[in-house]
Amino acid sequence: MIKNLKKQMTTWTPSRVLLFGFIALIALGTILLKLPIAVHDGLRITWIDAFFTATSAICVTGLTVVDTGATFTVFGETIIMLLVQLGGIGFMTVAMLVYLMLGKRISLRERLILQETMNAGSMEGIVRIIRRTIIFVFVIQTVAALILALHWMPEMSAGQALYYGVFHSVSLFNNGGFDLFGNSFQNYADDLLFNVIAFILVISGSLGFIVLAELYDYPRLRKLSLHSKVVLSVTGILIAVGAIFILLFEWWNPHTLKNMSMEGKLYSTMFQSISTRSSGTTTIDITNMNQVTQFFMIILMFIGGSPGSAGGGIKTTTFAILIAAVWAMMRGREDVVLFRNRLSKDLILKALTIIFLAIFMVLSVAMLLAITEDQPFLAILFDTTSAVATVGLSMGVTEQMSEFGKIVLCFAMFIGRLGPMTLAYALGSRREQSLYRYPEGKIMIG
View 1 (cartoon, rainbow, N blue to C red):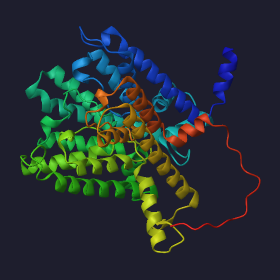
View 2: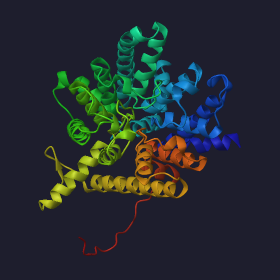
View 3: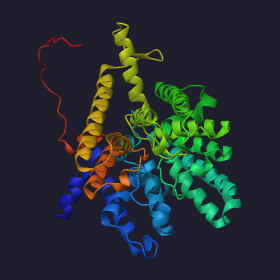
View 4: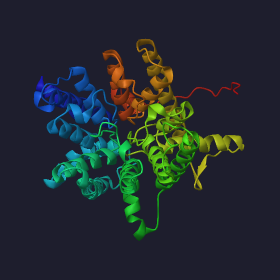
């Protein structure tokens, strides 16, 4: 039986390896977080809450049903931090690093799995990208952790400041959404140094490791791929547009921006624009925002980060393809072009499929929760989008949900992190090329 199982596993597709790898890590995380050593004395955590926390951590979401800092001990918080790190850079990336350190060769099948993990277009240079990914992660997180620790030392002990620096550096870079303060980072809304470090961490983690590698090589090569150009341009536009709209919508809101200094307003709106698409942390109380702002944030969460990053959503490149396709159709152009490069019809169809599946998932889960949970629909839609897009922002309804609602959100986070198409490939049978084509038909649309 064991031989048959091993034989079956060796024939698994990369998508199936990722699927069951994530399931195994969630199961392990749930067991570890349920241990008495993981929670403070006198507190108990249910299996459902442990499962939810482990799923949220490995899917780098950040939705919580208990206060992380008040509930978990250093052991429990460390487990959460490790799960966020594994979920952010990919457990296969860590496994391949161990292989490389031991001097072992990376097989073709393992390279295919790495390609799926990194969401790369090809296997070319994939091992080099993995090496650089580990270096980027270590350097960026270490430097940020030290800066944050020094910054927080005046308000806490040196040991606690260093621990907080490491935990929040990992959480922010991997877009994990977890914090130990209990109110995210609302106490640092007008703190320039903290905001700058947070911006760098979140943006670095949401760009994608392939883009980071190209940016590292840019001073020498003076060249960027189409992928990196689209990611960088769309990310910049979304950050700027998001900050402007949030500033306009909340300028006169006495519960959010009105009573802040001008610096606080600018830092907070920029932080929220960056964080909403992937990080799940906040310096403003989301529950007190205007409804138009909350709905606008749903749109930003739905778009999410970039391929091969710790961010979720439909991805910036998918959004760019949709906009380019609509623009081409409006102008009567047959080709969809980005940066003087024509996009294939297969790529456009894949982008439209991803968008449709994501919309279907968000609406299906939101309508199901609207039946089972006694909460305002906008709040349910907000938290559902946050779960599917693995963002982690909440309007406060997640922790009030029934056990059924929590389980539904767990599946939403899991599918959102893997991606609906990856899950379909993992569970489906092998795709076979059709030997014939049907005649072309015409129908009226619009």
